[in-house]
Length: 89
Image (tube, rainbow, N blue to C red; front, side):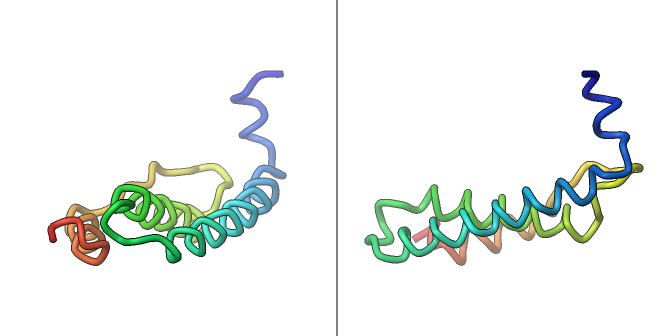
């Protein structure tokens, strides 16, 4: 099957939303695990989780049906997440 044809199908939004729901579940599980660990040793995974979770949230708000637009996060948001996760401490 042609990937371009698959993502052009009208059902793609519903399928992607199901996958996003599964991703949220995995993010929640990872957050529970990370919360039980000392902060200093897992700064990078915390930041990755925060950034990818936000990308997923923005993607869901935008929708997955064509036309889609590339999701990017503002630099100030990334700085905020770095500070929140204590990467500069």
